[in-house]
Amino acid sequence: MIDGMKPSVSCVFVCHDGAGRILLARRSAQARDEPGAWDCGAGALEFGETFEAAVTREVGEEYTAVPLEIRQLGVRNVLRDDPPSHWVAVVFAVRVDPAAVRIGEPHKFDDLAWFAPGELPAPLHSQLPATLALLR
Image 1 (cartoon, rainbow, N blue to C red):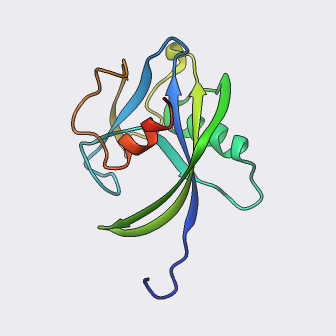
Image 2: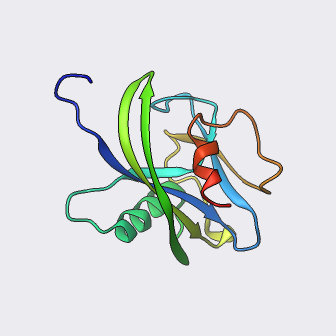
């Protein structure tokens, strides 16, 4: 363990259109890690915030959309060596209106697209396959 480090809590969300397609964002060159990889959305849980409030806030910030439905899928304990990190990911499926979706944080993402589960782009973020497994 890195001295003084503690795990953080993240709300991870897989946005979908209610008809089987999922929304993924391509991480920009300025992304914190894995630039060019396709990923779902996520954000840190803030002190005093409910999971649903965090997901609603983050979906608005990242995709400019309002969740129509939020469903908790599960929890993942995520440990990474490079860069060293540890977080507890509470994972949600979030239905959104595809017409309302836009890139809200262009410094983090440079593309958004809808995909059928069997037609995912490459490369995927290293954590995305385990997250998508909770959808099934």
